[in-house]
Amino acid sequence: MPVALAPAVAIGVGAIGPGIGIGYGVGKAMESIGRNPEVAGPILVPMLIGLAFAEAIAIYALVIAFILAGKA
Image 1: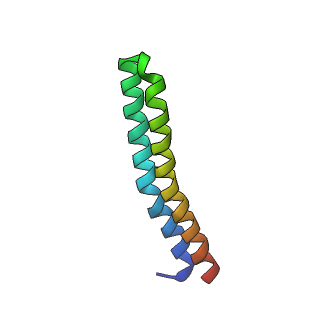
Image 2: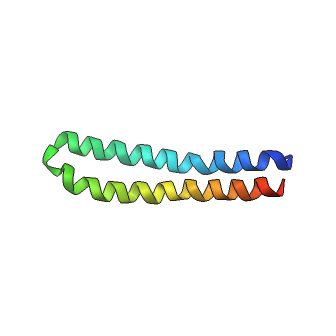
């Protein structure tokens, strides 16, 4: 694989997992809020913390892509 494609592959593969995780987590949170609207407040904070952790993995992949782009 050419070195120039390495950053694109790094961010592409690194964004798949967080994208799936964020979609699944928010979907389940909205499903539970739809079933019981009174729990919207208690569900919101853990959901946002989980989203931040999932998004951090994508940011790490972006940093690695920048590092690889600097070496290309």
